[in-house]
Every structure is written in structure tokens, then in C-alpha cells.
Image 1 (tube, rainbow, N blue to C red):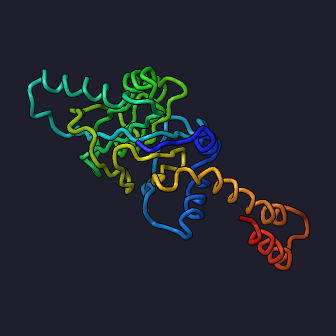
Image 2: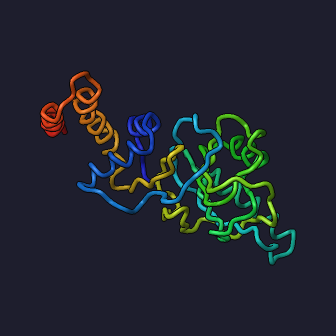
Length: 233
């Protein structure tokens, strides 16, 4: 698992996901169309702060019953909880519903949120279904693809594996940043520069936003603000 300093972790937790995407582009030296969610999302609570942590990955299915004895299904579920809560963390659960795009069964609801929050998980990103909206424990964020009423035949099928969630490819132990906008993977080689990059992105925005929001904004003032921003970083 990659290392992350307290400074970087704090900077990421104070920044929304669009800012983190901008900072990544600054570190990489250009824009990218990969590494982030590309489909619409719903979330348990839009007002919660960003979720930051290392990916604990799994796959689920809900459209058909498990093809294993009940005892094996239960054992795999317990193994899942042991896996997602292991290590120093912070950990984020990233679950691919393999019924996608026809997801029907909600793995995430009152019971799972309570258990994952109790085990110390930082949050969840999934392409699956979220339910029990009025009964979820406060403070635990779930980013999902839709809201639905039933869990159908939902069950865990695979652990600790590469997944694709809403167009975002994720490997176990990838660093994830997520909020009400969606989620992004922060490659390991860029982690320690993220606090610096976030600071640069925010400072470069100041002259442009200040000029644009002041009375008498003109194209000439926009050019001047761009020139000032270009000097930063």
C-alpha cells in the first residue's frame, strides 16, 4: 500500500473532488480522460466531507442467487468484512456490481452502512444500488449509481480484485478521493505532490475569480487576471 503523509491526507480531506482532479492534471502536466467516474451518481449525504482512503475492492451480483451453499456464501461475507477492515487505513470500499448496467439489488443500506462505519471504513464507492435513505447512520458516505428498494439476491462474488465502477478503473490499494461529484483515483507516484498541487490550483484561481466577481469586469481585466494566474506555480 502506498504511503501518505498527514499533510497530504489533510489537504485531500479539505478539497472537493473537482479540485483534486485539477491538481492531478497540474502534477501530470496535462489533462486526462481516465481515472475518474464518468456516469451520474447519487450519494447518501451530499453535505458530507470528501472520502479519502485506500481501495478495498470487491464484486457483487444481485440478479440471481449465489451458486454456492449458504455456508460458503456466509463465510465469504465474513471474509469480506475481514478484508475491507484490515490494515492501518484509511480504507474506502470500492464495489463493482457485475449486473451493471442493469443493477437491481441494494447491497448498501442501513445494515451495511452501520457495519462498515463501525469497522472504521472511510466510505464507499459503487456502481450499485443504495437504499434505506432515511435510516443510514450519519457520517458515512456512499457514492452509488442509483436508489432502489430491494436487495434482491445480492451477494459478494469476489474480493481483492481489479474493478470498474462507473467508468473508473480501480486496483486494490489505489488511493481514492470521492464526494458528491463522483470519485477519482490518485496514482501512487503522484500522492506526495498533491498537497503542493492543490495549493497551486487554489492560488491560480484567486486572481481570476477576484476579477470576475468585482464590479466593472472586462475582457482587459480578464487578460490581466490570466497573466497574473500564469505566474503562479
